[in-house]
Length: 306
Image (tube, rainbow, N blue to C red; front, side, top):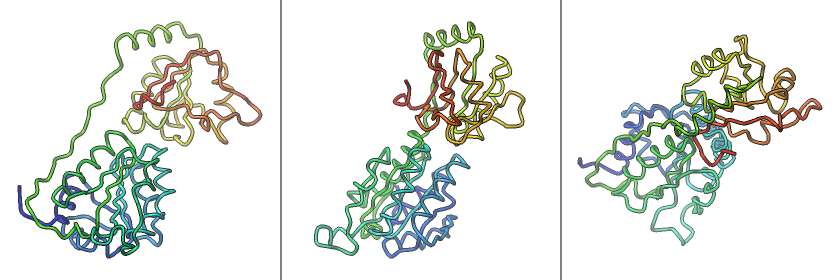
Protein backbone atom coordinates (compact mmCIF):
# COMPACT_ATOMS: atom_id res chain seq x y z
CA UNK A 1 0.00 0.00 0.00
CA UNK A 2 1.05 3.57 -0.62
CA UNK A 3 -0.23 6.90 0.58
CA UNK A 4 -1.83 8.97 -2.17
CA UNK A 5 -5.01 10.82 -3.09
CA UNK A 6 -8.03 9.03 -4.50
CA UNK A 7 -7.39 10.86 -7.79
CA UNK A 8 -3.91 9.37 -7.92
CA UNK A 9 -5.30 5.91 -7.13
CA UNK A 10 -7.82 6.32 -9.95
CA UNK A 11 -5.16 7.38 -12.44
CA UNK A 12 -2.59 4.79 -11.33
CA UNK A 13 -5.17 2.02 -11.76
CA UNK A 14 -5.87 3.20 -15.30
CA UNK A 15 -2.13 3.22 -16.00
CA UNK A 16 -1.92 -0.37 -14.73
CA UNK A 17 -4.56 -1.24 -17.33
CA UNK A 18 -2.55 0.29 -20.15
CA UNK A 19 -4.68 3.40 -20.66
CA UNK A 20 -2.96 5.97 -22.88
CA UNK A 21 -5.92 7.97 -24.17
CA UNK A 22 -9.18 9.22 -22.65
CA UNK A 23 -11.87 10.90 -24.73
CA UNK A 24 -13.97 13.64 -23.19
CA UNK A 25 -14.56 17.25 -22.25
CA UNK A 26 -12.75 18.86 -19.36
CA UNK A 27 -14.98 19.50 -16.37
CA UNK A 28 -14.72 20.68 -12.80
CA UNK A 29 -16.12 17.35 -11.57
CA UNK A 30 -12.84 15.56 -12.25
CA UNK A 31 -10.37 18.44 -12.41
CA UNK A 32 -8.12 17.03 -9.69
CA UNK A 33 -7.63 13.74 -11.54
CA UNK A 34 -7.32 15.43 -14.92
CA UNK A 35 -4.36 17.48 -13.71
CA UNK A 36 -2.32 14.29 -13.34
CA UNK A 37 -3.35 12.61 -16.61
CA UNK A 38 -0.41 14.05 -18.54
CA UNK A 39 2.30 13.30 -15.92
CA UNK A 40 0.97 9.73 -15.86
CA UNK A 41 1.29 9.41 -19.65
CA UNK A 42 -2.44 9.68 -20.38
CA UNK A 43 -3.69 12.00 -23.12
CA UNK A 44 -7.10 13.64 -22.78
CA UNK A 45 -8.49 13.84 -26.31
CA UNK A 46 -10.90 16.80 -26.31
CA UNK A 47 -14.19 16.79 -28.21
CA UNK A 48 -16.95 19.32 -28.89
CA UNK A 49 -19.74 17.04 -27.62
CA UNK A 50 -19.66 14.16 -25.14
CA UNK A 51 -21.51 11.83 -27.49
CA UNK A 52 -18.52 12.10 -29.79
CA UNK A 53 -16.20 11.14 -26.92
CA UNK A 54 -18.13 7.95 -26.22
CA UNK A 55 -18.30 7.06 -29.92
CA UNK A 56 -14.53 7.64 -30.17
CA UNK A 57 -13.94 5.35 -27.19
CA UNK A 58 -16.08 2.71 -28.91
CA UNK A 59 -14.18 3.07 -32.17
CA UNK A 60 -10.85 2.96 -30.33
CA UNK A 61 -11.86 -0.33 -28.72
CA UNK A 62 -13.07 -1.86 -31.98
CA UNK A 63 -9.83 -1.04 -33.79
CA UNK A 64 -7.32 -1.75 -31.02
CA UNK A 65 -9.02 -4.47 -28.99
CA UNK A 66 -8.11 -2.43 -25.90
CA UNK A 67 -10.21 -0.49 -23.43
CA UNK A 68 -11.77 2.68 -24.73
CA UNK A 69 -12.25 5.26 -21.98
CA UNK A 70 -14.50 8.32 -21.97
CA UNK A 71 -15.30 10.89 -19.31
CA UNK A 72 -17.36 14.05 -18.94
CA UNK A 73 -18.88 16.58 -16.59
CA UNK A 74 -21.52 15.24 -14.24
CA UNK A 75 -25.17 15.59 -15.26
CA UNK A 76 -25.71 16.79 -18.84
CA UNK A 77 -22.21 15.87 -19.94
CA UNK A 78 -22.78 12.28 -18.90
CA UNK A 79 -26.32 12.03 -20.25
CA UNK A 80 -24.99 13.02 -23.67
CA UNK A 81 -23.10 9.70 -23.81
CA UNK A 82 -26.06 7.31 -23.58
CA UNK A 83 -26.59 6.66 -27.30
CA UNK A 84 -22.91 5.99 -27.94
CA UNK A 85 -22.64 3.58 -25.01
CA UNK A 86 -25.66 1.71 -26.37
CA UNK A 87 -23.83 1.35 -29.69
CA UNK A 88 -20.72 0.09 -27.88
CA UNK A 89 -22.83 -2.43 -25.97
CA UNK A 90 -24.17 -4.05 -29.12
CA UNK A 91 -20.70 -4.01 -30.66
CA UNK A 92 -19.20 -5.83 -27.63
CA UNK A 93 -16.70 -3.00 -27.12
CA UNK A 94 -14.82 -2.93 -23.78
CA UNK A 95 -15.55 0.73 -23.11
CA UNK A 96 -15.22 2.18 -19.61
CA UNK A 97 -17.32 5.30 -19.13
CA UNK A 98 -16.23 7.33 -16.12
CA UNK A 99 -19.16 9.31 -14.73
CA UNK A 100 -18.33 11.82 -12.02
CA UNK A 101 -21.50 12.77 -10.15
CA UNK A 102 -22.69 15.46 -7.75
CA UNK A 103 -20.79 15.68 -4.49
CA UNK A 104 -22.04 13.61 -1.58
CA UNK A 105 -22.94 16.72 0.41
CA UNK A 106 -25.43 17.80 -2.23
CA UNK A 107 -26.97 14.50 -3.31
CA UNK A 108 -30.73 14.61 -2.79
CA UNK A 109 -30.64 18.38 -2.29
CA UNK A 110 -30.31 19.51 -5.88
CA UNK A 111 -26.53 19.56 -5.90
CA UNK A 112 -24.67 20.97 -8.90
CA UNK A 113 -26.14 19.32 -12.01
CA UNK A 114 -27.40 16.47 -9.84
CA UNK A 115 -28.67 13.58 -11.93
CA UNK A 116 -29.27 9.92 -11.14
CA UNK A 117 -26.64 8.61 -13.55
CA UNK A 118 -26.65 4.87 -12.90
CA UNK A 119 -30.14 4.14 -14.34
CA UNK A 120 -29.14 5.90 -17.58
CA UNK A 121 -26.68 3.14 -18.44
CA UNK A 122 -28.05 0.06 -16.70
CA UNK A 123 -29.42 -1.42 -19.95
CA UNK A 124 -26.16 -0.87 -21.84
CA UNK A 125 -23.44 -1.91 -19.40
CA UNK A 126 -22.40 -5.28 -18.02
CA UNK A 127 -21.17 -3.79 -14.74
CA UNK A 128 -21.73 -0.52 -12.88
CA UNK A 129 -19.21 0.38 -10.22
CA UNK A 130 -20.38 3.08 -7.83
CA UNK A 131 -17.62 4.32 -5.55
CA UNK A 132 -19.33 4.27 -2.15
CA UNK A 133 -16.16 5.08 -0.20
CA UNK A 134 -13.18 7.05 -1.55
CA UNK A 135 -10.80 4.51 -0.03
CA UNK A 136 -12.23 1.97 -2.51
CA UNK A 137 -11.43 4.12 -5.57
CA UNK A 138 -8.71 1.81 -6.92
CA UNK A 139 -10.80 -1.29 -6.23
CA UNK A 140 -13.84 -0.09 -8.19
CA UNK A 141 -11.71 1.35 -10.99
CA UNK A 142 -9.86 -1.94 -11.43
CA UNK A 143 -13.08 -3.92 -11.32
CA UNK A 144 -14.64 -1.82 -14.08
CA UNK A 145 -11.63 -2.39 -16.32
CA UNK A 146 -11.53 -6.12 -15.56
CA UNK A 147 -15.24 -6.61 -16.21
CA UNK A 148 -15.21 -4.59 -19.43
CA UNK A 149 -12.60 -6.94 -20.87
CA UNK A 150 -13.97 -10.20 -19.47
CA UNK A 151 -17.52 -9.38 -20.56
CA UNK A 152 -16.44 -7.59 -23.76
CA UNK A 153 -18.93 -4.82 -23.08
CA UNK A 154 -19.11 -1.34 -21.58
CA UNK A 155 -18.89 -0.75 -17.85
CA UNK A 156 -19.62 2.39 -15.84
CA UNK A 157 -17.49 3.89 -13.07
CA UNK A 158 -19.61 6.37 -11.08
CA UNK A 159 -17.65 8.64 -8.71
CA UNK A 160 -18.97 11.39 -6.41
CA UNK A 161 -16.92 14.43 -7.35
CA UNK A 162 -15.73 15.17 -3.82
CA UNK A 163 -14.22 11.68 -3.50
CA UNK A 164 -11.37 12.55 -5.87
CA UNK A 165 -9.80 14.71 -3.14
CA UNK A 166 -9.64 12.09 -0.37
CA UNK A 167 -6.27 10.89 0.92
CA UNK A 168 -5.32 7.52 2.31
CA UNK A 169 -3.47 4.25 1.82
CA UNK A 170 -4.22 2.55 -1.50
CA UNK A 171 -3.21 -0.69 -3.18
CA UNK A 172 -3.28 -0.52 -6.97
CA UNK A 173 -4.87 -3.75 -8.26
CA UNK A 174 -3.23 -5.54 -11.15
CA UNK A 175 -5.41 -6.37 -14.17
CA UNK A 176 -7.15 -9.73 -14.20
CA UNK A 177 -7.62 -11.36 -17.58
CA UNK A 178 -9.52 -14.59 -18.17
CA UNK A 179 -8.41 -17.23 -20.65
CA UNK A 180 -11.27 -18.48 -22.80
CA UNK A 181 -11.72 -22.24 -22.65
CA UNK A 182 -12.34 -24.54 -25.58
CA UNK A 183 -15.68 -26.21 -26.13
CA UNK A 184 -16.64 -29.43 -24.40
CA UNK A 185 -15.46 -32.70 -25.94
CA UNK A 186 -18.97 -33.96 -26.67
CA UNK A 187 -20.01 -30.73 -28.36
CA UNK A 188 -16.84 -30.60 -30.44
CA UNK A 189 -17.34 -34.20 -31.55
CA UNK A 190 -20.90 -33.38 -32.64
CA UNK A 191 -19.63 -30.41 -34.64
CA UNK A 192 -16.92 -32.51 -36.30
CA UNK A 193 -19.50 -35.14 -37.26
CA UNK A 194 -21.75 -32.52 -38.85
CA UNK A 195 -18.87 -31.00 -40.80
CA UNK A 196 -17.63 -34.42 -41.96
CA UNK A 197 -21.05 -35.20 -43.45
CA UNK A 198 -21.63 -31.75 -44.92
CA UNK A 199 -22.08 -31.51 -48.67
CA UNK A 200 -21.88 -27.73 -48.83
CA UNK A 201 -20.65 -26.08 -45.59
CA UNK A 202 -20.50 -22.29 -45.40
CA UNK A 203 -18.64 -20.27 -42.75
CA UNK A 204 -20.04 -17.05 -41.30
CA UNK A 205 -17.14 -15.09 -39.81
CA UNK A 206 -18.18 -12.49 -37.23
CA UNK A 207 -16.77 -9.84 -34.96
CA UNK A 208 -15.80 -12.40 -32.35
CA UNK A 209 -13.21 -13.77 -34.76
CA UNK A 210 -11.54 -10.36 -34.85
CA UNK A 211 -11.76 -9.89 -31.06
CA UNK A 212 -10.14 -13.29 -30.54
CA UNK A 213 -7.39 -12.48 -33.06
CA UNK A 214 -8.60 -15.54 -34.94
CA UNK A 215 -8.74 -14.38 -38.56
CA UNK A 216 -5.80 -16.57 -39.58
CA UNK A 217 -7.41 -19.58 -37.89
CA UNK A 218 -10.64 -18.87 -39.77
CA UNK A 219 -8.69 -18.78 -43.02
CA UNK A 220 -7.02 -22.09 -42.16
CA UNK A 221 -10.40 -23.71 -41.41
CA UNK A 222 -11.92 -22.44 -44.64
CA UNK A 223 -8.98 -23.70 -46.68
CA UNK A 224 -9.01 -27.08 -44.94
CA UNK A 225 -12.71 -27.54 -45.68
CA UNK A 226 -12.74 -25.73 -49.00
CA UNK A 227 -15.67 -23.82 -47.53
CA UNK A 228 -16.76 -20.40 -48.77
CA UNK A 229 -16.88 -17.62 -46.19
CA UNK A 230 -19.29 -14.73 -45.69
CA UNK A 231 -18.80 -11.89 -43.21
CA UNK A 232 -21.41 -11.13 -40.59
CA UNK A 233 -23.05 -7.71 -40.70
CA UNK A 234 -20.63 -4.81 -40.07
CA UNK A 235 -17.65 -7.14 -39.68
CA UNK A 236 -15.99 -7.09 -43.09
CA UNK A 237 -12.62 -7.30 -41.34
CA UNK A 238 -13.38 -10.82 -40.09
CA UNK A 239 -12.20 -12.44 -43.35
CA UNK A 240 -10.05 -10.86 -46.07
CA UNK A 241 -11.82 -9.80 -49.25
CA UNK A 242 -8.67 -10.71 -51.19
CA UNK A 243 -9.05 -14.41 -50.37
CA UNK A 244 -10.47 -16.73 -53.01
CA UNK A 245 -13.04 -18.20 -50.60
CA UNK A 246 -14.49 -14.84 -49.58
CA UNK A 247 -18.04 -14.21 -50.78
CA UNK A 248 -18.99 -10.91 -49.15
CA UNK A 249 -21.05 -9.76 -46.16
CA UNK A 250 -24.56 -10.75 -45.13
CA UNK A 251 -27.30 -8.52 -43.75
CA UNK A 252 -28.37 -5.03 -44.65
CA UNK A 253 -27.11 -4.01 -48.11
CA UNK A 254 -24.98 -7.14 -48.14
CA UNK A 255 -23.57 -9.23 -50.95
CA UNK A 256 -26.05 -10.87 -53.34
CA UNK A 257 -23.45 -13.52 -54.12
CA UNK A 258 -22.94 -14.31 -50.45
CA UNK A 259 -26.68 -14.53 -49.86
CA UNK A 260 -27.29 -16.82 -52.82
CA UNK A 261 -24.40 -18.99 -51.72
CA UNK A 262 -25.42 -19.42 -48.08
CA UNK A 263 -28.98 -20.23 -49.13
CA UNK A 264 -27.58 -23.50 -50.53
CA UNK A 265 -25.67 -24.49 -47.37
CA UNK A 266 -26.53 -27.69 -45.55
CA UNK A 267 -24.22 -26.79 -42.63
CA UNK A 268 -23.49 -23.24 -41.44
CA UNK A 269 -20.42 -22.73 -39.24
CA UNK A 270 -21.08 -19.45 -37.43
CA UNK A 271 -17.88 -18.18 -35.81
CA UNK A 272 -18.02 -15.32 -33.31
CA UNK A 273 -21.47 -14.09 -34.31
CA UNK A 274 -24.82 -13.91 -32.54
CA UNK A 275 -26.66 -14.31 -35.88
CA UNK A 276 -28.89 -11.40 -34.96
CA UNK A 277 -31.99 -10.48 -36.95
CA UNK A 278 -30.41 -7.47 -38.66
CA UNK A 279 -27.45 -9.57 -39.77
CA UNK A 280 -29.66 -12.22 -41.38
CA UNK A 281 -32.18 -9.75 -42.77
CA UNK A 282 -33.75 -10.63 -46.15
CA UNK A 283 -32.28 -8.32 -48.78
CA UNK A 284 -32.50 -7.75 -52.53
CA UNK A 285 -35.79 -9.65 -52.60
CA UNK A 286 -34.10 -12.77 -51.17
CA UNK A 287 -35.08 -14.58 -47.98
CA UNK A 288 -31.76 -16.34 -48.13
CA UNK A 289 -31.22 -17.90 -44.70
CA UNK A 290 -31.03 -21.72 -45.10
CA UNK A 291 -33.84 -22.78 -42.76
CA UNK A 292 -33.10 -26.51 -43.09
CA UNK A 293 -29.35 -26.21 -42.57
CA UNK A 294 -27.60 -27.47 -39.45
CA UNK A 295 -26.04 -24.61 -37.48
CA UNK A 296 -22.75 -24.82 -35.58
CA UNK A 297 -22.56 -21.59 -33.57
CA UNK A 298 -19.53 -20.47 -31.58
CA UNK A 299 -19.78 -17.33 -29.45
CA UNK A 300 -18.11 -16.14 -26.25
CA UNK A 301 -21.48 -15.10 -24.81
CA UNK A 302 -23.54 -18.21 -24.15
CA UNK A 303 -26.71 -16.09 -23.99
CA UNK A 304 -26.36 -15.41 -27.71
CA UNK A 305 -26.43 -19.09 -28.68
CA UNK A 306 -29.49 -20.57 -30.33
